[in-house]
Length: 70
Image (cartoon, rainbow, N blue to C red; front, top):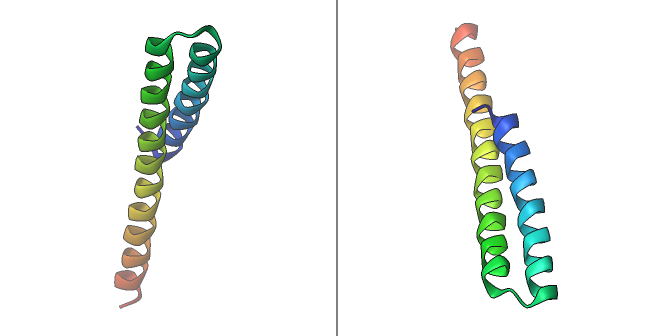
């Protein structure tokens, strides 16, 4: 997946997880609330992976520019 795809999927999972948690809490369903918390955590990890990919890509591009300048 690309960095943008990872970030978008992460945001979607975070949002869905928040909704599941809220619904689970509202109806007293502990399983749904826990599932939502897990999905939210998964989303945070996906976003972090996307951000890391951006950092690595930028570093590689900067390195390449430095090498090309030689």
